[in-house]
Amino acid sequence: MVGTRGVGAALVLPALAALIAGNFEGASRKLAYAVIGGVAGAGIAVGPILGVGPPPS
Image (tube, rainbow, N blue to C red):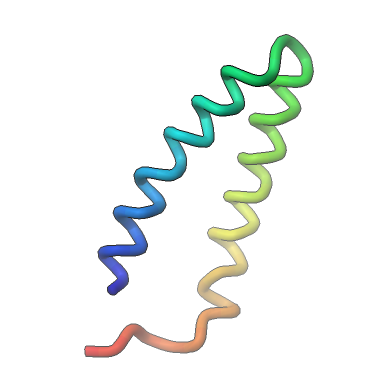
């Protein structure tokens, strides 16, 4: 199950970067990448804290 989540995340991130590149230009593109980076960083930091527990064996 955890591996499936990792594969899903690996597929979503490049698609999100492509959407930003295609829809934003100049300073707004930089801001969009910064927001996505901040949200991803916060998720990486907070995710393990809010997690329910270890994955099932």
